[in-house]
Image (cartoon, rainbow, N blue to C red; front, side, top):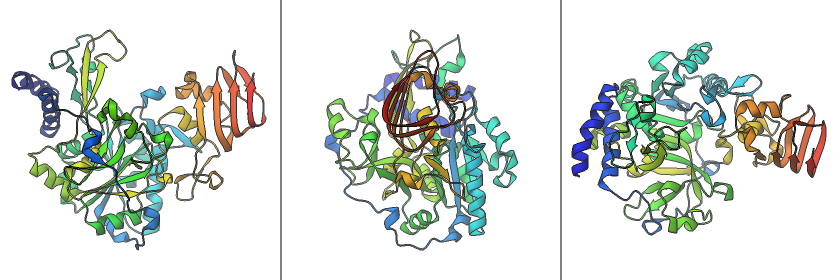
Length: 464
């Protein structure tokens, strides 16, 4: 631990000079200590067991209690810029349908819930420094949601660690590159350090529902809230059934040492256990990042751990300048908010239908969402059209359409009809005319900006 004693003061000073608070520093200190100690951060197959069964939302026989809304805050994670989709603003400002963005739909969902239940619904965002101003400006037209510190707190940032000697990354050519997001596990220290946790508890809030702003299926469900409150669990994760499409994502498991639940991500799986990790018949549930937290239990967890919630640490190898692969190799230390399930005794999980998990991570997802394969319900939820029977279309766009502006040039007249589409694959430079209908499995290949004429294409390959 000599390296820690020598190097930690440099990190602490760097973080204090940057204006980071004690909770952010304590969280990074824990993560850094794990790194320097050489502790094995992997979760081997021998240490866990499958979760045999879980209660399901569809099987709950429980009367929803609207009174619980007075003690509940709905929190959306909104720190992502959507750079992977070519955006320089919050991804939640992207238009989904009918001129409405993710944030518009979230705001309207909350307004409908208020009207239906006759009760206020407290709402907050965890923004980043990059998303805060644009987001607050966009939500100014919904003053009932709140303003300023009542509406948001801002996530922290963490120093990058030089891979060769574990020192603070130093990059004079661009000091911003010395910092990175600490993963969405930062939710907890950001709540503590910003004073948000204390403020919510002082105002009488007890329960918090957390989800990602790009997951329009994740509404505040009164039945789940009532079940969570009655269960008296300190923490509950919404999970969905894994399919082959989910086999590379993290899964829920039981910790053999404690008997409690844990989340194993792919970065925590030893190479020799990869086969078991991807066995969706063995490990049947994946984390949707829809989480329920008892705020009193969260405060106690911080108090019991000297102001730090010890989460499993993931090491992410990068270069200090992500655009310069020859720049200094660094380690980004990250945590996942769902991993907190292992930090609470008696934490639980509930099986939800896939309709509560519809995130938009790529332009493939966005194209499907903008099509008739999805509908907006009267209470502004986004659901698969009934004819889809719960199965979204499988969209595979050429890498040239990775960014939103390129995808919109592919479909300048709006998305084609995908309500009866099983798979749509597009390769090469193509433009869809208005009035294209895709049915079954269709493969489109083009070059030199060929136009796909209006018409119905069903179970066929089209070379333009």
